Image 1: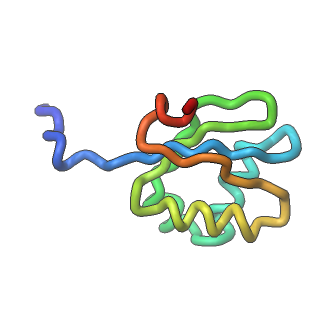
Image 2: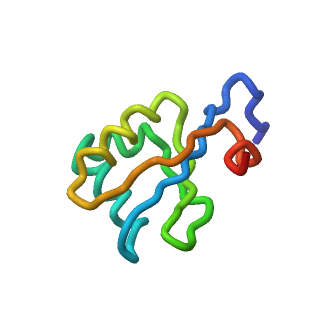
Length: 93
């Protein structure tokens, strides 16, 4: 099978999420599922890049950044987005 050309690939954004508790990955998934349902979860294309010390780096579809921000804001556990970038290198700046 041929690989996708660059214009047909999804544009990703990387988010640094800070949260309290051990199971931050589960809380992020629950927040998006409760706010937007399974259709919204599939549209955002959520994937976890790195986690540690209360911070997690996630990757989402570019069009779904606002949906993810809103879902984390209304979730009952405290989570906040520290930084958003188009590249992983840009998160460290």
